[in-house]
Length: 150
Image (cartoon, helix red, strand yellow):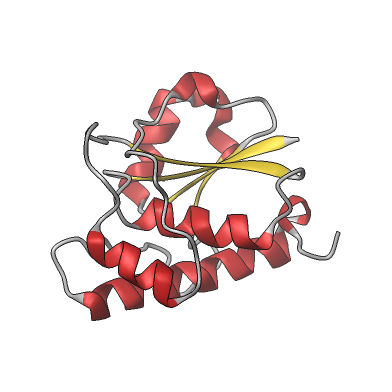
């Protein structure tokens, strides 16, 4: 079993939404799904509008506090998906041995980066969620380990 790491900046919006989507699609015994932030702050909770959007789509809202990305948690077969190019660069500097396994969540999308909806309205969070959902679909089609057909 491998771990799928989903990383954004604060672990408040994008990575929790992506983690919820992957968890809903993949059997728990196939891979562990972790959500983290490069600059997560303890004591905070998932952004309220991210929670609203997740609930509106029938997905559970994470109850755990935002988690700081820990390079030591990246195993030899793990996949690390980030929301923006700057996140990929930072992660590759933190975990150089996993360079080829650190990718953009939107790798196969016309708009490769998932913009941060923080500070926006519910429509911004819905737009980010739709983009993330399309990215998750692509990963589940293109990476056999994430295929929903197993």
